[in-house]
Length: 200
Image 1: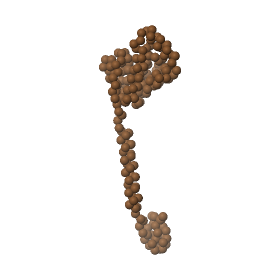
Image 2: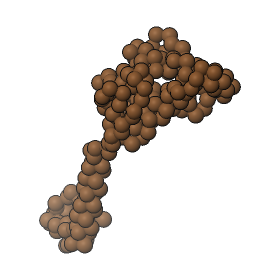
Image 3: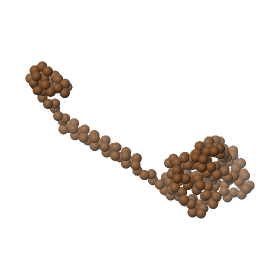
Image 4: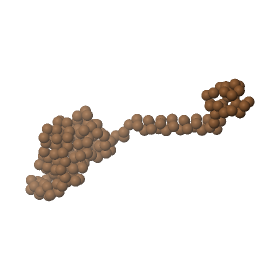
């Protein structure tokens, strides 16, 4: 509703200051009611508080944990070589055969699972290893190629290539092709994600 002239009762838009009919000054528009103003102020306060919570949540640091892995010397060296580049978000250090990993719980779980994969048959005799690998080959139902940095591809291939690791692996440049069971392929996929600099 516009502004109404108090003399001739004609209607005018809000921005008009004088009546176009009789020329008298139009009354000032009514002020916002206190209730409406209060509700508007409350809405602004709620919106600002909500945005502050969102910003705080976005800036909150990830929870990290440490985990130690006791591995055979060559396996410890292979995993250290895999995780030590600066673009990998997991922090790793090595003290002889003990590997210390710091990252999110999911990242530490992924590294532990990968360590379990590459050491699964490490203590087997040659005869036992041959039988285990023959059985593992029957379960290789997935094939996947991982594109990494050249250094990352070389290190991943080096960790998976030993004959006691129950996967079939090959490398061409910065691509590593892995044939494995569904479960072991999932372990390799999580490690490849870490090597690409992603967080879990």
